[in-house]
Length: 162
Image 1 (cartoon, rainbow, N blue to C red):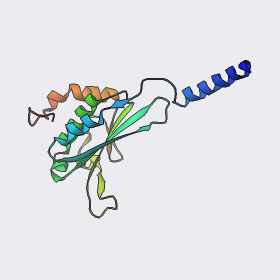
Image 2: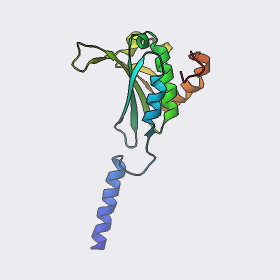
Image 3: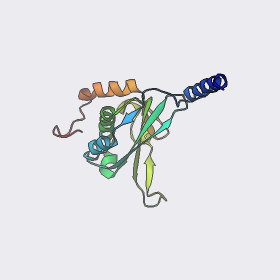
Image 4: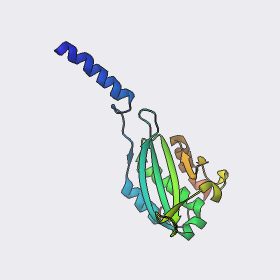
């Protein structure tokens, strides 16, 4: 019995490891810190975070959805700069970081609509890749964006995280 169990256990462990369900550092996000940091920005009305597998074992992407009003939409580059910094500080271990922006839309069944970021900003306005209405960054791009932050002069109120 023991001899038959060992190959079954080894096969199960292999399947779990190859499917991404094995051991490894789990990605983390402090949702409360991300929400608190972003909702202090003028024009941001709500923040939600979620995650999904990228399809590769041990590879997970963090999605941050930022709801904005007209003021936030008008200052979208600032909102996204702050979002990148707040998420970089409040999360670790993700393979990709995706940012989406929504705004209220009474005609929509969900009450909001996704903003096509690439229609509002040019690729030079933000780090990362603008695609499908969202902004996606790798961990290296996140680190670089935070390092470049002082040069981007996005601070509006030195007393706040913004």
